[in-house]
Length: 415
Image (cartoon, rainbow, N blue to C red):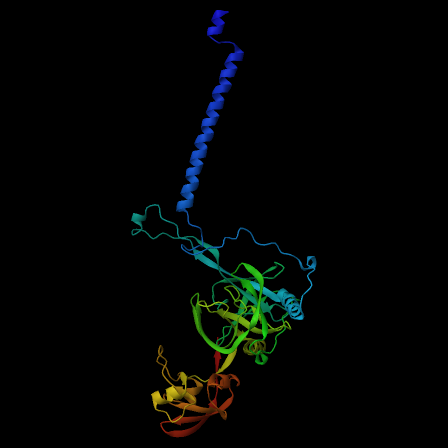
């Protein structure tokens, strides 16, 4: 009995000792796992950058997309007639506005196992289909014709996908790019698409209420912002994503236009499209621009009639004359269009163009076009765009102190 007490060999005692030892082992494992997990988390936080965020800039992390609240669940009563018209215009237009997603194949560079030998061999990187940009467009015909910006549909080798407000996705084809304005036409296969009604941008006045709709930041489709017409006939230099252009006769608005809104509609309170959102001033807040819809009407008409977007073309590089230009070049007139050499190409008159056939030369000042005086309020480009390719036109020219009257047929410019 004494031997049994000093040397615990019974099954019950041995079982208790094993249970005690296993419990301490488990506790040690848990402690070590916790330490290593903490160290791993700290290492990841220090060394792994957050994709898409720039160091030093505040960031907004969006963990999930907001839920879509269906219209039938909302029982809001507008507080004013003005607010009611805004809501009606937005609801009327939203079904016809689409998000445009642009993808293309890009090479994925992978660090070589032996970078010191990279001079000896050229590694081939795998290619993947990747989203490169997003924009907005809207239906202008029930059979799937979509109007957007040219810079949204600029890439020739890209694939284009259109997503409607009810999350229906369609493959899209770029049919035409406007050679003059930042506009393009796309097409999806289908029928009975909701069409937005086009208004009259010539009737706009500063202070008028407008709405901008688009795929803001490429994340928030169907975003509606409201503001007023801040100005008309603006001229801006637009650039980005390998694209640059001088845009004229733009509508300025303080309705928020962000990246991703390009190509979306600018609406009046009747729900009619009065402009195509095209650019924003990055150094300012609430300074956005839209192409007047009447400019787009010509492109649409040209495509529907000819299958192309074409414009009349004279073929000169010119400078609008004012008092300063008159003094600098010692001209007899303070108005007109002075033919000058382009700073990049060196061309003043395009070879083979209508201008060359008419007989225009460097230093000529076009005073009148088809009997209308060329001024800052009636620019030569505007007068030309009122014509059609092939039209016979007359020009009154000042050349080194002499007045000449010339005529000829306009050429054609195609994107």
